[in-house]
Image (cartoon, rainbow, N blue to C red; front, top):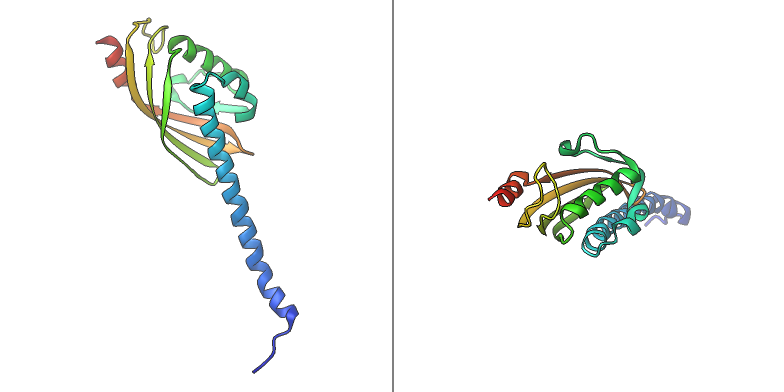
Length: 164
């Protein structure tokens, strides 16, 4: 039986270690990305801490890919404007995360929301009516912060509940 030199064994193991380290690093970043999104929804929206969490959760160059808000200002100030208008319209909104997962620098969340319509939104003046809905938001992350977001929501379902 031939003896293998310890140097050859170490050289054979090194690539395996680098792959494992990279995989571990990727998994760790995915968990950080998930946690950023979870904090934004659970602490930011549900506990009214959006303003406090803006710089922790959002990249300074954030953009909104939602076609409903095509004129949305970008960056931290744009998100601040979005929060202000949403809070004015639906101050008691409560979100429940039903699905949350990350893949690389992408995070997806599916949510359920219940809220009361207290201010103009979607071109509809305040109705005082409560609605429930669901939606999905996809995020592109950068260094553990939200860089871009795309939201799909049941707008027709919300509008029907508010107008009926």
